[in-house]
Image 1 (cartoon, rainbow, N blue to C red):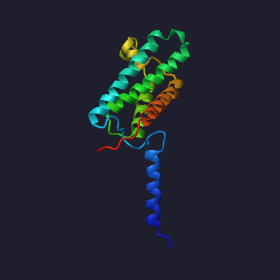
Image 2 (spheres, rainbow, N blue to C red):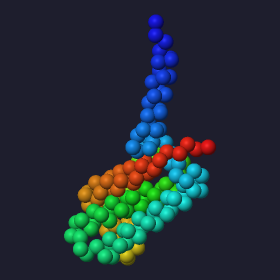
Image 3 (cartoon, rainbow, N blue to C red):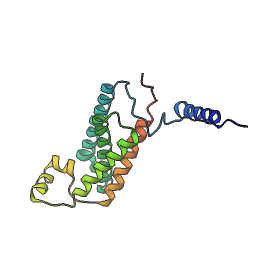
Image 4 (cartoon, helix red, strand yellow):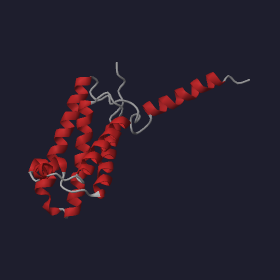
Length: 167
């Protein structure tokens, strides 16, 4: 007679070991980020990544004339979603990667859907450069796909960081 408890423990150890040591993505969607070990270190890493993404996004916005307008718009939307992912990581560093991905997409989609609403004061804010960069100007369903791509890119980038067991 086979003891199913022992069999389950052995299989789970093999699976866990393979996930932790052999996967090219370094871990799981359902673990929290372990960059830099400490909570403060993780926050600092996320803020630095957000700042770097902002710099790249501004470069695309200001100097992206070589790109056609659609490519520039999509690139900017992808970078905006990546920046939001890093910022939410700085605010909520203990939330698992999957949870942070869902939160990020919800924020991005919420901002995009808010562009369907037009009030004079909100439109005046969107007419400014900072307002346009943060809130956008008009709803485009294509942006929702770009946001999903940006969240996926940031999620994969975070998962590629080697898994470090919290001590």
